[in-house]
Every structure is written in C-alpha cells, then in structure tokens.
Image 1: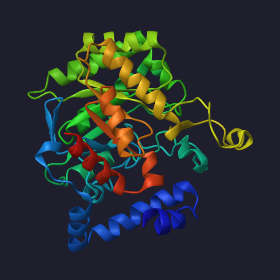
Image 2: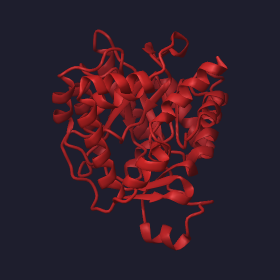
Image 3: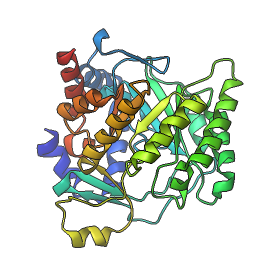
Image 4: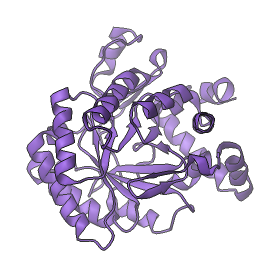
Length: 345
C-alpha cells in the first residue's frame, strides 16, 4: 500500500515539505486513541525474544529511529506507534537555529538515497526539554543527540555540548555526541584525536558527577580511515564512553546511478540511504573486530530490508537504526526487520 499509493503522493512534493506533511498527518491521525491502538497492533512486534540489554538499558526491540527525523521532539509519541524499540531526538543545539538555506534536502530515487545539508536546524534545547517534560510512552527508550551551534567556534564547542547535556539529562535515556555531520562548517574537525578526547572527557566528567550516569555514545562519519577508526577505539577506551553509532552520512559520491550532472547540481551535503550501506557495514565490522568485540555499536546507514539489518547485526552491531530508507520502504520496514530477527533467533 505504501509504495503503490502513499509514496507516489508524497513524492509529488519537495522532500522537506513532504517530510513535514508526513509528520503532520501522522500526528493528526495517531492522536486518535483507537487509531493509535490499531497502528500499534499492526506495526509493533511484541516478543521478549526481541529485547536487548545494551548500555545498561533494556530495549523492547533492537530497531530504532535515527536522529534527524524528529529533531525537536514533536513527533516521538506518534512515531512510537510504528513499532520502534527506541527513538533518537535531535540533533539539538543550545540555541535554536534555522539551518542552511532551502532547498537542502534532495531525493535520489535511482539510488534509494537522500542528500541533505540541513545544518542542525532546530528550535534549541530548551524547546525540546519542554516537550520531554510531558512524558513519554511506556517502555520507549529516548536518546538525545547533541551538537554545537554554527556560530560557536570549535575551541568553545565543549561548552555547547555541555549545555545541552546538562539540560537534557533528566529527560533522555542516553546521549549521542554528534561531531560527524558534514553540514556544519569545521564540525568534523572535532573527530580528531585531541579535540574529541577533550570533549568526551569533559562530558564524562559531568556524567560521573550524577547519582546515576547515563550512556554517552559517539556518532562517527563513514569517511574515516582505518587509522582514524583505531584512534576512535582508543578514545572510547580512554574516556570510557558507552559506545559508537556507525555511521552518519557520507560526503562521497562514488558508484551512484543518479546522473552525475544532477549530483553536481545538488551540490554539497551528506549522502544517506542505500549508497552508504556497504561502507557503514565495513566500519561496523572493522570496529567490532579491532576491539575484539568489546565495543558496543549501533549500526545505521542504508538499512532498507530485513537482510540489510541482519547484515549490520552480523557485522557487530548490537542495535540498529533506520531513517532514509523509510522514505522509500515505508513504516512496515520496522515490522519486517523485527519479524526477521525473531525468525533468526
């Protein structure tokens, strides 16, 4: 039904407008209690065998919604009816910012991919906190993905991350430090060993002062070299953060079916969806093997089928996340993945 009726309708609109329209309609429809229950009965796969204990948290199932879909926490209650085991909000920054000029989101239908240069557009951490104060659905794990404001220089980036960490701490179950988006100038420089160690060490210092510290994860780019991945493993060990999310979007444009002139016309941005699938899995496998299986990993990037999900899990991921491929596959993807995981268990 999604591919025959719903997807063609939404593809009539520009991608960003289609995204907002989708969320508006979902929120509207799922605010009706009976419809919400019907969605849950259709999409949710409830089975104890799907539960995963990772980072000291119990996830109802291993399939999560990646950051970027619900930046401001306006829709996670509605999205929880689609069967996710966890939902990651953000990326959020201390102060609200409009992000990059539109258009900034582009479909690549021939590749089942997206290119975005959103630029951390969000209403700011205080707005997100106010929404989270209203509570969350029972058993839903919520992650908070934090970044720095565009105007904040890298030398002061630690302050931005600390502000969002402190304000979100009472309301999320885990944190993700995003230093890997290609759409904020110089942000990826924070992945270098010295600034990254400084940033994560400071957040862990704040974390360890709490009566009950929460898992802190690092989201990395797929464009890192093996040497840089070795540094990441060492940093995780030295700072004692909980794990890694692999991976964010790529700046590479190799192997695309979309016409090269169209790619050039789109311009800069992070590529996600099916084109990043193989590289993401390579990074997961490398981190898993190089750490002797000790590193906890959430795998994300190009998961458009149950087979893709199993591949990520077999490569070493403990949990997985989806986003871009939902645009092409629809919400039944979550159910199909969970059903396949059950079948394999």
